[in-house]
Amino acid sequence: MTSSKEEKFTMFRNRLTKVYRHLGKQAKRQGVSCYRVYDHDLPEFPLCIELYGPKLYVAEYKRRHGMTEEVHDAWMEQTLDVAGEVLGVDKANIFLKLRQRKPGRLGQYQKFDAVQHEFDVEENGLKFFVNLSDYLDTGLFLDHRLTRQQVRGLSDGKKILNLFAYTGSFSVYAAAGGASEVVTVDLSKTYLNWAERNLALNGFTDFSRYKNIHADVKQYLKTIPPASFDLVVMDPPTFSNSKRMEDILDIQRDHSELINDCLAALKPGGQLFFSTNFRKFVMEAANIHTKQIKDITRATTPFDFEGRLFRYCFLITKD
Image (cartoon, one colour):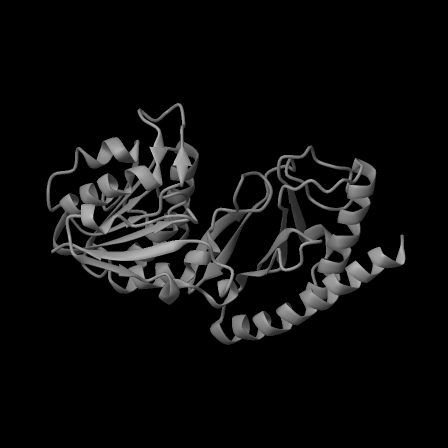
C-alpha cells in the first residue's frame, strides 16, 4: 500500500480517536450506550459509524470510489480494523452494511445478507430491539433520542397517536410516560410487529390500551373522529411510492394536508411533533390551520449529531 494511502488511514485513525474521546465522555456522562461516532467526517472515508452497546454498526455511503472489488474489500477490511481497534470492538461484533453493492468477501465481518441478528439495547431506562444486519436501518433512529424524551414528558394521562411509527420507539416512550392510550400506525406489518415486541419488551402488553394499526397514514387520518387525541407524533419519509399506498407521498407537497389532518384529530391545545429528513424542506406556515408552529430542531439535536444533523423537527400546537 502506498504511503499516501497509509497517510489517509492515519488521518482516519486520528479523527476517529479524537471524536470518540470527545463523544465517549458525553455518552458516559449522560448514560447513553447507543450513539453515532462518525458521519462522513473525512471525504476519503464516507462512512456512518454507530455504537450499539458493545456492537458496532458501519454503513458505507454510496459513491464512485474507482476501486476494483478486490481493492475495495481490502480497503474496507483495513478501515474496519482501525475502527474496531480505536473503539474497542471485536471483529465478531462489527456489522457492515454496504448499501447498493453486492456483499464483498470480508472474512470475519457481518454482512448485509447475514442471518438475522437481533438484540436489545437500552435508552433512558427503556429497552429496544435493534438489528444491525437485516434491514435498511437498525430499528432505532438515534437522532430522535431527545425528541422521544420530550414525548415521554408530555404523555401522562394522554391519548397518543404515533404515525409512520416504524418500530414504535415513540410509542414505548409514550407508554412509559403514563399515556392512557397509544395508537401506533404504520404501513409495514414487519415494523408493526417490531413495535409490538418493543412495547412488550418494556412490559406494555395490554393491547386494548396500546393499539397497533396497519394502515396507509394519509388515508387513516381521514377516518379519525375530530378531537380524538392529545398528542400526535409524525415522522414521515421524504418520499414514498409503495405499492401498498393509495397515493404517492411527497412530504414537501403533502405536509400541509398531513399536518392539518393531524390538527383536526387533536383536541384543543393538543400538540403535534412533526419531523422530516428532507434537507430542502420549507414549512408552508400560511397553509397550516394554526399559528403555533415552533421549530425545535436545535432543542432536539443530541450531542452526537451536533453540526451534522440534517432533519427538521417542529412542535405544532392546535389553537
